[in-house]
Image (cartoon, rainbow, N blue to C red; front, side, top):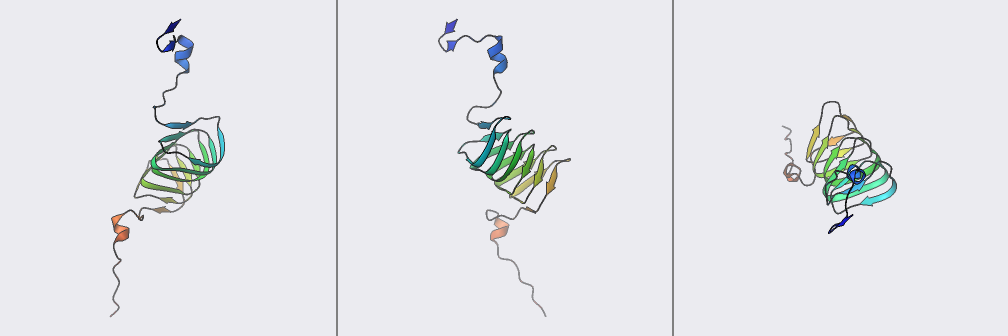
Length: 142
């Protein structure tokens, strides 16, 4: 049966619908990507990525089943899965309880949930932060 929007949905079609939000790019669990992954919209990754990920002015979510072996640049990053590589966020990194990072992390704001694992350096003094722009006081030796 057809309606104005196309074929009518039966129960099987309704069950196959996903709950992703419109306007968010998505890399599914079965996807293996090698190279530079670039997006100009928010992105969720549930699959395997090797190389680099650039979502500069947007948000990036790493799903719980994701296996990321890449350097990441994004504005806001939420990590539920595994990331092996360096991470640079313009605003915030939120590492959830199932999140695991092996690499250096640079962001003005970092949230690490109980149970999360971070192996690497954490730097919250970035070029964007006001503290980093202020001159450092010099010690006077008397």
